Amino acid sequence: MAEYATLEIEGKKYKFPIITGSEGEKGIDISALRRQTGYITLDTGYGNTGSCKSSITFMDGEKGILRYRGIPVEQLAEYSTFTETSYLLLNGKLPTRNELNKFSVMLNDLSLVHEDMQTFFQNFPRASHPMGILSSMVNALRSFYPELKDEDDDIEKTMPRLLAKIRTMAAMAFKISRGYKVVYPRPDLSYCANFLNMMFDSPVKPYEVDPDVVKALNAFWILHADHEQNCSTSAVRVVGSGRVNLYAAVSAGMAALWGPLHGGANQAVIEMLNDIHKSGTKLKKVIERAKDKNDPFRLMGFGHRVYKTYDPRAKIMKKMVDNYFAKNKLEDPLLNLAKELEEVALTDEYFISRNLYPNVDFYSGTFLRAINIPTNMFTVMFAIGRLPGWISQWKESIDDPDWKISRPRQIYTGPTEQQFVLIDERE
Ligand code: ACO
Image (cartoon, rainbow, N blue to C red; front, side, top):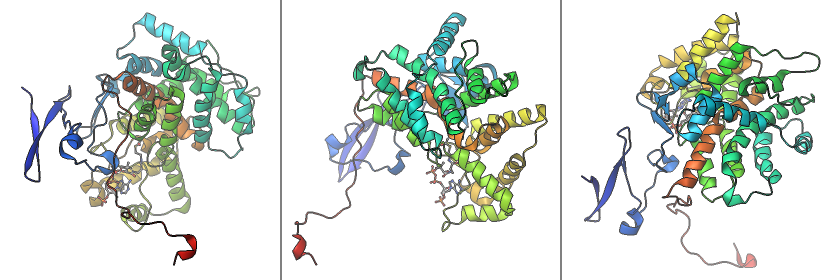
């Protein structure tokens, strides 16, 4: 039986259908609201607005659940690889061995980037942030495929092409920013091992693939692979809704991810921990600053729009970091500091009453430091991980029969009509 929500405005009643998701989530379909009532909704930051129906990722912020295509992220991080999880996100099902082999071979075959791209990279100023370089280069990549029509790309090839090339471009950005020789992808290496080799192999010190690092990096990227309608994914969908090509839409997502309140938080956390460590500031003082509404300082890596309990990704990341450090007998004062800070924050009434817990970015930087990724590459590492999610969400929106260009409305609060005054007559 159809369910409806009733809205009463100025004494008149209107009915709007209630829609229910496969996990029992409820929403009110207000598509006809303005047409029927003349009213719009106001929801700054979209905290209560569903922008689409999606079958890719399910999260429950109250229970701390995250699943890709129905599979818990805990199981994927434990048993899957990033390549397999990417296939799952893109295709909606786990691959057979044969399908996975074909997909992996395709990723390797497509991993080289055009030699001319090196010229672009070389011309960025040395101090450029790798996120700025990467988002520009992803957009520029489209220019190398002039045979494609914007609205009808050879999408089945474009998706793996982007997945394959992003790690080459990310490693290239790192090498060139250091003035080192670029290392080419190797067809015999898996996705993660190939990336590590392109980052760390050098003529003076050949890189030896460490299976522990490869396993941990796979899990790191799986944890970042999708997160439903977050800021950067919404950017990809909004920009893509104008029917722009995939490269441009993903480049927009990368720009959104760069922000310190979003994916840029992994860099901001380590910078914050470094500052605290170097200055020797007492943790109580740090917490006081985070609580002070007159101080712009926030506890980076804490809080989340959807999770009102411990972020399941942060839980796995913390365990993974602990295992990795123990196995490799590593010590990092910033990891110890992060744990102390978490303990102080989680017993503070301010954080308890607002349900502020560590998010995925709180511990991820300590792992990336441990595997020698430079701090300014942290958000790039997040971006590589999020790419299958962005592509899947973009594809879903393009195929959506209910698709519409994204175009929110507003409540105007500026001046009412006034007349133009000639410059010499102005007061
Ligand atoms: N430190 C101190 N106070 C915080 C923090 C924090 N990290 N996060 C939220 N709060 C407070 C807010 O000041 C607000 O307090 P109030 O109710 O007294 O006004 C309350 O908690 C609710 O926070 P909002 O900002 O309304 O929550 P919102 O959902 O809009 O923001 C966000 C979520 C942006 C993640 C926020 O928690 C934040 O800035 N965290 C730090 C940055 C960060 O770690 N970002 C990464 C998020 S995960 C990701 O994107 C991959």
